[in-house]
Image (tube, rainbow, N blue to C red):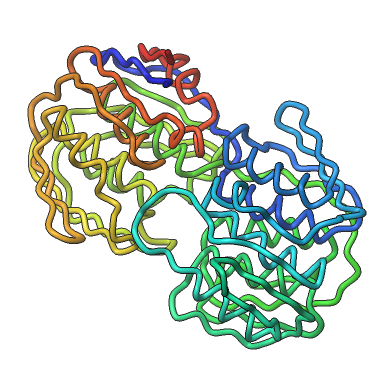
Length: 414
């Protein structure tokens, strides 16, 4: 079993570049299936979720090659429409292949997806939208057996679901007619997917707003695309510097995508400066801030909640967190408490009382962002911590130990 050994109390200093965004590259890889020609994806991170996506594409008959951060996908002659149980269970986001497979092949057989256990994340919105586009879906036997053809539709989402928005975009690009998504998710990753689909020749407009319009049936071709930087990885580096002390420059990310996170770090006492593709943070003794409420973009991102909580656990004052996105997003709290944090949880509310110091402990990651939070806390704690459950962290962070070591952290993988 792999583990991180983290010796806390060492300030961070230097510059680090974030890798491509996990939540962008996964739907973009699924979109490659829509093209009859070769697609080239740059800034593709080496993550276990990406590896699972590439395995799915290979299983479907695509030719896939990786060279460093460049991935080439040739879906000129796909041979399958089923994603087996072992591949689906690798990641929750595997359901994103539903729209692409059904759109390209006219049928799709999938099972329930896997990934982090963050409470109920039903795919009802995905299925209702695909049905609205004319698909027949049989949910018997624990699987999804879908057949087309697909036609354009007017779809109103009850909540601005990122995954559902992406699945509809993929399916609609291959459908006949025009599809309109109302109350669409507005995340930067949605805009990145639109940019790639337009590179392929799809007619998609409105991403970044609450209404997206897709004119389906366009002749698609190959394309080349560079994935945007991962704003959650950037937030993790910034909160790590806030927890450990020091000063860090994070590059390769649009500072506007981090505005809610940097605003909280400023309020907590840190000095933050931003440029076109970078954010600079100079740490200071941390203090409590006004309530942090997670919300769909452009609100505070749920994925940054845990690392920020870990940073604010050591300091002065009190901070209230309200988790509005997932029911089980405080699973890291018990592990932080083992390090001396004083955090009280009641339902979706967590109250963090800052303490003068955290101490080292043996802790275990139970999900992706909770695992990152444990690393952040360990960097600011006294003594040597051991963190297990790294397979969760590997889903969304490429060589986290290498990046942090480059900033002066004493962290190694054993």
